[in-house]
Amino acid sequence: MGYSVQPNTISSFIANSAAFNAICGEIDGNIGSSIPQPVLVIGQEGSGKTTLFRRLIKKYPTLHFVWIDGRFIFSSSDIIGQVSGDSILIIDNLDYFLNRCSYEEQFRLRRFLYNEGAPMMIANVSKLIPALTEYKAPFFEGLKKIHLPPITDGDLTRIFSDDYIDRVSTMFKFVPPTINSVEIISNIIEAGGNPKDDLDLLLSYYSIIYRDIYNNVPTNSQHILNILSNSEKDMTVPDIREASGLTSGILTPYLKSLKEKGIITKDSSVKRSTKYFIKDPLFRIWLKKETL
Image (cartoon, rainbow, N blue to C red; front, side, top):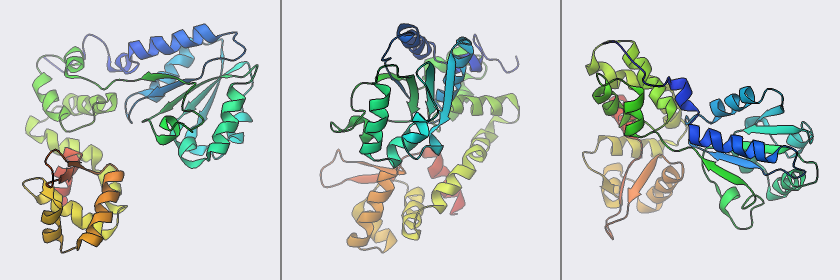
């Protein structure tokens, strides 16, 4: 039996029917409203947020959508100047605006969206950041939040044939639980080849990303990552200090920075023996191969 996507195609699975229907319900309920409810879609990178927005536009061909890429927003004026009250404002990657603009700028956007005759905003972010969770933040409340859930093992069985599910599940353990990961794995399987090569092929898809991550941290951080990737066990601060030759005063800020960037994480379940490890298991394998 050849490669099979069943019973739905991957492209139809991307939409995530529950989230898609929830957003459609918000659009239907807000059409004609003088102050429509803003909607925020939350899903990690690769979860299908952008694809979902494209499907919305296809579903409502008679509505006027204005699409703005958040990567190029540097002030609230960049948004307000492009949209009118009869529009539905789509902001892809709103994170960029929230991270780079002051609360004063964000309040300007909020006031615009909550004025009589405002457009309806549907935006997405990859995660909940302080600008969405702090009590004093302009968008702490007032947004209808819709989450895109991660892909589960049950989803995989609905997408792939039984002949490949063990192979798929093995690769899926090393990647984020997103539809983008499913597409990468499906490409590897569809290309045929020896299953023994799956991990190397998976690494090839992420190699450029991992190289950028590694090159964009300081030398001492690279040194710490090399140590962690080549260790057979998770390491405590004394372990890393001994292996790196860095004093605690120097080591601690680098560990903190790597943790804040989401590159490493720690297990604090055992008091006085906090252990650090590389968060992404595939990145750890890549590092180990690169530093041999």
